[in-house]
Length: 305
Image 1 (cartoon, rainbow, N blue to C red):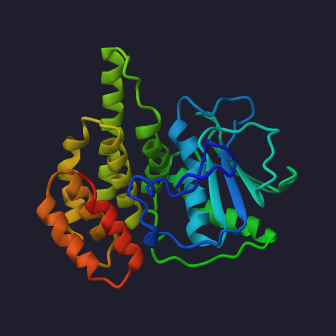
Image 2: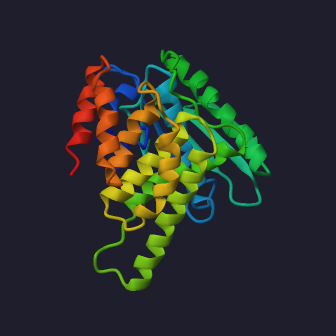
């Protein structure tokens, strides 16, 4: 879902929500007047946010915003691009600014600020390998939730929110930004053949990596992220989507319960691969559920040509 609360470069998590045809039944409801918490990446001292480790640096605020969206009654908003100081966001109840040190320094920082820019909480953790990075990432959502509680934001429980653990979590956080890159960094129609080939290889690498993550764990979120990136690639006309059919089918076929979110997503994914019969059978099962929001989502899926 896209929001203009903080300009056209902001979006509301999760990143898979839009490409998956807005499955509102999967996302906890929030009031229109709910407190907004803004997340953004920032430079580590003078170092750039891009370059090596770009997806981790830009994926971190997306991951934390998703965790807050499913774990509190606040409305989380993420800036797509890094935001250096001293920019202020008076419409936010809290601002969470994240930074990752350049390769070799191996530190992760999360600062929580009030609307005037006063630092409410600052956490810095060292992480010298993937296992340490994973351990740090696992603890950061709680750090954020505890920090924003001072503004009256309450924690809630969600049965869907289960990101992977261990080193798989590092891939998941990187995949958050990679999912956006599938559609955000499309090459122009006038691009040369080399640029087109490089872009195609990049999308293939992103989708393959997310597919491997989704099929290596039973958690819901990695599969939603993979399917979201797959649909984003499909929507921009990427020719590599068909190459991911085996990975997608492997995750779809093990979901047999209509109450499983992945069962519903399989109706959408199988449809884009041309398996209309199986998609229709699964949508019939979903229509039998007593869930109006699900029914509206199924109607959107059925409208896909």
